[in-house]
Length: 92
Image (cartoon, rainbow, N blue to C red; front, side, top):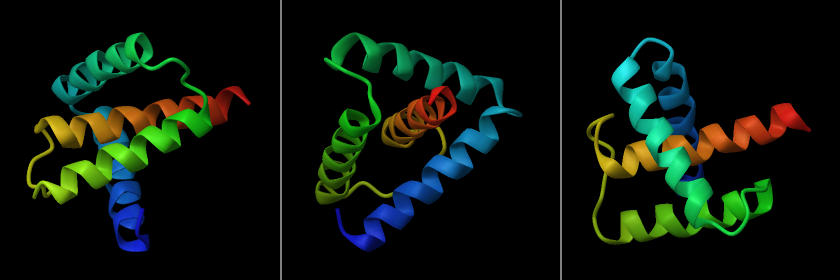
């Protein structure tokens, strides 16, 4: 992942996780994505999540996605992965 994309993804994650505390709809959407990620990924350790996040973000940006809404699928997915990463850090 390029440095610029990494910063953007980090900023999306930070902003989204912060917004979850005041926006129940976003929190619910992130929770649904977290459940799906846990069900579909073979492992949800930090290394696996970072690899997934890099692939996912690059694919999204390569197809022209740009974060314009906190409600679009890609934004919520990136926030969900970032939330899982934070949970892994807390558990460590």
